Amino acid sequence: MGRAPAFAGAAWLLRRRRGRGALAAGLAVLFAAAAPAGAQVVGFVVHGDAVEQPLAGLVGDAARGEAVVKNRESANCLICHSIPDPREPFMGEIGPPLAGVGARLIPGQIRLRLVDPTRVNPDAIMPAYHRTHDLLRVDPRFAGRPVLTAQEIEDVVAWLSTLRE
Image (cartoon, rainbow, N blue to C red; front, side, top):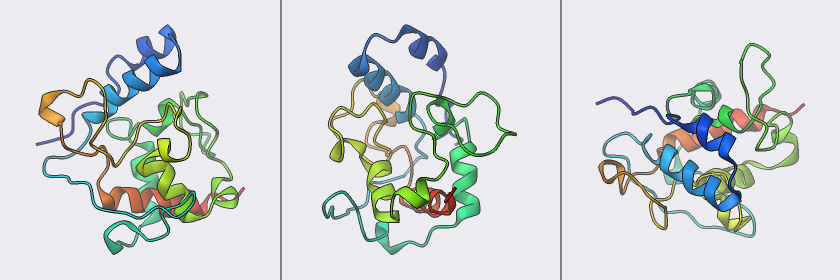
């Protein structure tokens, strides 16, 4: 079974801009549909503002991580963030630009922001990509599944860590 499109209706949602809470709720609904069948949240330990250890001890692959970030059918990072790739059309401006993120944050800090950004900022509008509880209006077909698998999280961490400029 393939992944459901994660961005259906996102343009309407973003134009509407009814406040951070409404946007966060809408993004959670949109992105909760992206998890592959059978995906499960793995445990992690937060130290300060980082998850220092890779999820499930996995090793990330930067090339796969770049593909996850650019995939507009699953994580859909580009709806909110821009990346240093002028070939990518229609990048977002809601989240911070990802250029240089590998110079600003260590891999553990990037990992925590992907897994559950509300651990760093309780008012974050970015969806938690590896959490299944306390989400709003999740389609029952996708309940209990994270948006990204542990391997996808590690792949994205590997790629974002290469963005040093």
